[in-house]
Length: 161
Image 1 (cartoon, one colour):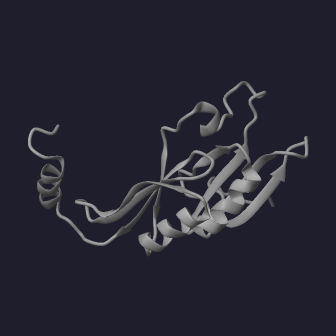
Image 2: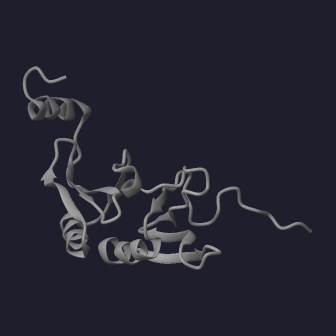
């Protein structure tokens, strides 16, 4: 009798981030300190120096990562190699202040201070030592769409948008 294969592996969600990092092994250690990540899988590359695949779990989510492999068609580059990132990884946590402070103490750079935002979250942003941007939030207030629109208009000031 054939074994049934799950189309989405156990523990994964429909969308799972996959980060390219210059120094994946060091990044795993940083994510453990900063975000309480748990290492799930580590597969070294044939060169024995880089990781071709790794998985960590942060809360209930799997994040995949690997080292740069520019020799593989140039598409496997980190934010450091590119000089920027256009993606923010968003973390909802029970205590944004504690997580934000732990990330900064572990070596992240605070790029937006924690603030109670108009949409009901306590929210701030950090950039990790590998160039990836993370937003950290705790939902602290339920806001109706009307309240959010009014608060957004006040936050952006007259003539915004």
